[in-house]
Image (cartoon, rainbow, N blue to C red; front, side, top):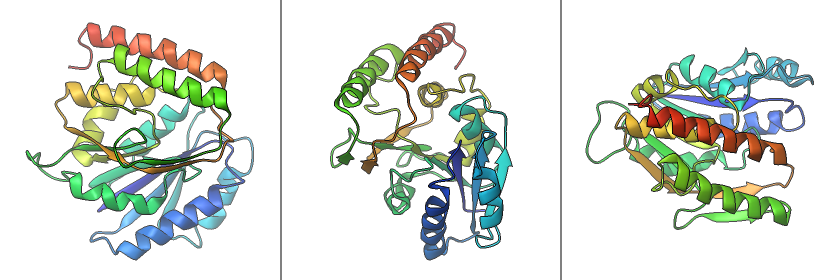
Length: 246
């Protein structure tokens, strides 16, 4: 299979239908050799997200649903990445804050087979890379926290060269996905940092690609999530100091 598209979801009944039709329309238009699959990994939602995805599967034939325990977004991504079959595997947020068609700018950089000097095994969306555009509707304090947290992550994590670790639009080759996510230990908000550091320590080349990002201002990331992510960052640093990711 050419591509697996993974969408972690928790209580997304208000926007999952629009997101899935947009993703499917884009993928269908590409006529990828070998086809594609769309996997919604639902973290035991308490609303009608799962039922809605089941109903939509009759209209989106390549759509499937996987229900997992609510252990965090990182756990949902972990389960999707390791239970998919694409030679390329991407995860994106359930609100399509990065539109599906922007994958066009990612695929040319990816090594889907053997590693080569001119391509990458991990290609990530970034709002800090040159050429990125932002449509920002979040409160001022969230924007300030975002800027501060990105700087702290770069300083502490060992990922100084990566300017934006947290965008929910990341593409992996099959071999990178299987090597990285089997070593994942952080399953809440800090998981992005860990999987990128694992990729770096496993000598997978990482490419940041500028994206157009639309922040609708209804983020589910609470202030408490920033605190827990900082704790996870320290755990990642400790794991890395002990050589756990090498």
